[in-house]
Amino acid sequence: MAIRNVRLDTDEILRKKSKKVEVVDDKIRELVDDMIETMHQKDGVGLAAPQVGVLKRVVVIDLYDDKGPYVLINPEIIKEKGEQEVDEGCLSFPNKFAKVIRPAEIIVKALDRDGKEYKLKGKGLLAQAISHELDHLEGILFMDKIIPGTLEVVK
Ligand code: NI
Image (tube, rainbow, N blue to C red):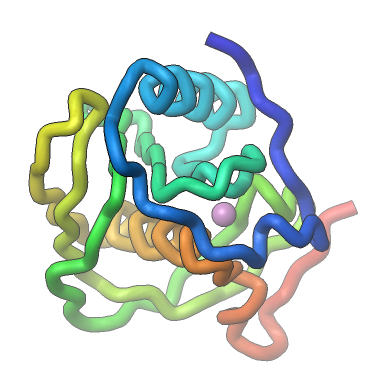
């Protein structure tokens, strides 16, 4: 495993749409493992492949409870419900924090690290993290969704 370089701020790769993973092979598993290691090293709760410069539909999430880390390959939203106003940050914007609106509940289907399909249902922070990371696969950033007047820049 290896720590990968996290793309920051205006890096144009963060604005590109990621492509579907055709086969979950050892190369994808290596990417997944590196992304988990990189997320952990930076104390993040989620990371999407474009953030490490790979335009593939791969996301990892860890809430540091007994359930993670979650691996979502080719994730698709099945259902979203409600709204929550939440404080948010992103490993690609390490000094910026703001409030955004996220779904209160979300259900996705995805492939796991072995290429097996499963469903993941999240509420609260997990719903927020899934929504945030899936946005990255479309080139959408939390900066696009900031509730006006809530941006905090930490020096
Ligand atoms: Ni992010």
